[in-house]
Image (cartoon, rainbow, N blue to C red; front, top):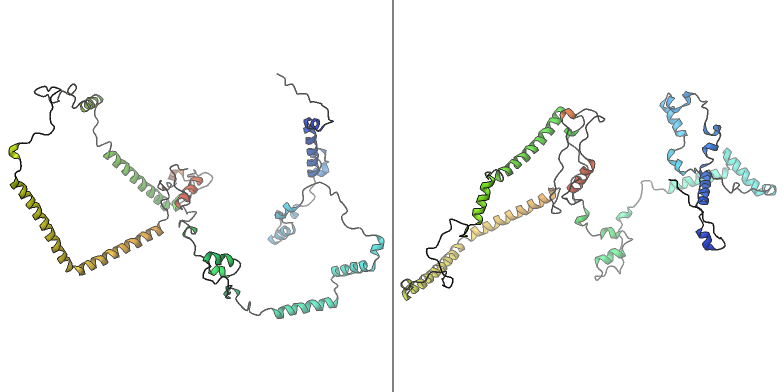
Length: 425
């Protein structure tokens, strides 16, 4: 189906609204092309062959790579402009609108004595002709500078000078924050600075980039590669042992029961205590009526009722037990008096144990590189390795292992920069 091109709307241009409604995109595109042509120069299709191509008339010996001596190549490189300054050069082909920017002096101005004198002096300076007076003044200034300069460096250390505090800052009611604010532009601020906070130090001791094991190289030695494989084998054996233990204490502990037997067992367990469904339920000898009341506890026999003598004996027995407890407590107090020296030793030993435990806890906190930042526990990535058949001895043909993004993400978690997450890269 042919596409019908929309016809341009031609309306009145006597109002601003009419000009806004008109489409001038083709004019804008034409002007943009013209500006681009001014910047880049004449298009290649309009240029001559002499402007596009050049005939090489120099011998190969003049080329840089054919130079015999290293000094000649270095001198030729030094003669060339520095490539880092090429960005400062203008690549626009637009001509300067003001071609003659220098002031053109008239013939009368050039004949002026002052102008002619300045021109002559410039010409002499280019040739190296300088007045005797200027040479003497320059030599005298150099001698004066060397005479005034200190022989052995600086004569005083400006950083050891004590700066007196202003009287307004020495008052007792000015706090530390105000003093630091007032002394912001003095050297005393460094002496009054607060100690560094804990969180300003590095939260880790692990290096940002850890060196891989020697066996992980693309061309390792036989001993390093065997050592790496032994390490990985030991870890895999530990994981397999843990998995076998879980299987042994969970699934393997229970025997397998057939489906019909399991359903029958479930039915018997669920129907226990229901006479209509449980055949083993105990049947009462006589059916009980619904209106008859039955107590849960059996009735009390009058012959087994406690008399006054039994109750008195029970009270006397409790009183004797309490008296024995008090006597035992008093004896323990008397014995503890003679054990004061032993108590002192026990207290000292307990304090030593507490101190050692506290120091050990602090040492473990300092030596521990990875801390528990969240609910998830940090887990290191598995070691990347290649089997002996995959080692090629060349970076071009080796089989790549690992992921740089995952390694950097795991390194940030290990250095306590990121909180360990359940999902890993």
